[in-house]
Image 1: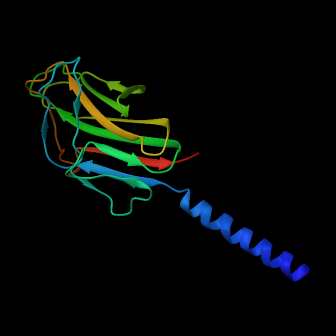
Image 2: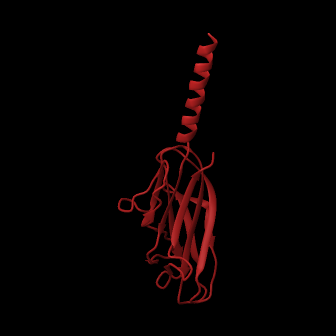
Image 3: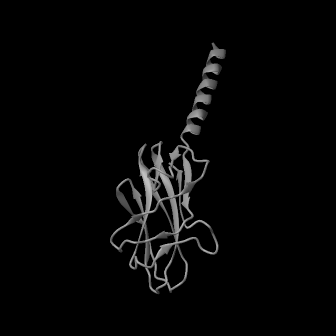
Length: 169
């Protein structure tokens, strides 16, 4: 009888380890090409992420179908970290990054700052988001000067926009 109990305990332990490995999710996607922001301050432009990590776990991202989205397959609380680098030929530009859960804006991820002409502005942020299986996250941008402002790779990095997601709870 005790051998059966030990065997059952080992099976239960192995199952718990397998479940904990399945309940892991992380991924990263980014953009390296310039993106002109041709929308006004009240309209958001979704940022197509043109590349991604090959090590994504339980998070999917396509560079051809809805490239702005990162979709999760496991429900939970995710830490979403994001960045974009902006520049403008006119002083006083105010770039904005917004993170969306499906079609709802997440207010905590809103960032803006003014900058002199010709400078790079790197906006970053982190937020915690509760997601159900098949929910997606996307990043959008806007500007008070949409005709001259662009998302660009700076002199310091070839990546001009990036979203990283990790299941934390």
